[in-house]
Length: 540
Image (tube, rainbow, N blue to C red; front, side):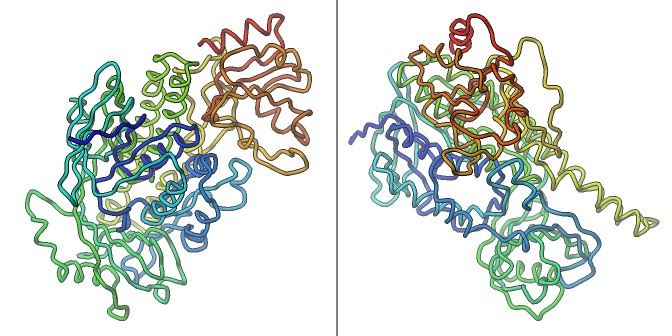
């Protein structure tokens, strides 16, 4: 049997798997990606990419102009509507997330609607420019064994039928919600495995003339016999209709193209706009988190580690952020400046975030029932229905959840027993440099160029940030751990001191930022023995 060697095998070429490979490449670590699909995602799936995920793509060197060109215009995708049918009466509406210029105060890359089938080719194009990444579509992972030296996987080529062995030091399982790797490892998903089932009907149509006066990314239809959800991946061409179904009493075979065309036609509410059914599939909403994320040299990333209800658009984003957290830690161990224990911090940090995202997504899904309950109640007034719709606002405004998560334990050194003075809620983001938080974004000037503070942090090293009087901290940097130094006032211009206020340090204070842009440690004030303080922080 042919054997191939690679430092890291990534199983799954979805956004999480491709991000992992891109970040490994950026750190000089070769990888091989295998994907059982023959091509990148072709049918519409996830459709929202939040600010934190775009920040990661930006740091990874992805072509952000290509990303921007593929995103939906917020003018088209900035609202969600409840209607009887697409052609019928509007019952209520809400804004969809913060996509305007005001978001630039918190991030250089605001949330956008970017469908997965448009995102994946952009990531793939970037992957193919990286000499140290091999990617093989139509290859399926079948089995693996591991020992103290590495992992041996058995891979089948769907085209030739040939079976090969792939030896790797690490295996990243980004192989989706059904994850054969998770099952082989005996890792149980915790939580309900069936909340509701749906038929996803993907169709092509130009409905601009129908909905152009009230464009939206989501339309909930409520007319009897036509209830469901339209997802406008592109108003001019690409749509999905989600219809609830009951697998206990129905068969997937019941949903032929003709039946699906009738369902979509009733929900559109007019015969004036032709459409073509492209794909039909069934899926089940779950809310599950893997009981653990690591089995020695194998790590679960993305949907293999967590499966959320789609009500919040957090699944893809959480997976990309998993990869961002994990890869620099693998590289630190490979480079010899961190022990194996650093890899245990991946689960310690990311699993609570996934649990929180899962819980909020589940709450959103349950709360959505209030609208249909209000409609089903005979004495509900228009004001009552509008109130039920207004109560969904948090579902579509989650900046605090997306940017404000703070790692409570792991590769961080907390500020003694202190807690952040103010924490982000689901909706409201409160920038903070408390250890464990993503370092706050602000606009500063470096060498005459306006940049985001997030551009100061290289993915292959820590960064020590000090105030203008922090020279003693800089002199204390004596470590095998690679560290860049940034002195506010010397290396960057922080007009009005806005960023220093967000960092929460005095002019002689300092903070240490990890490669993934999360604060590792902070000293708000100068201390006498800066060398000892910094050494303790790095050891932790």
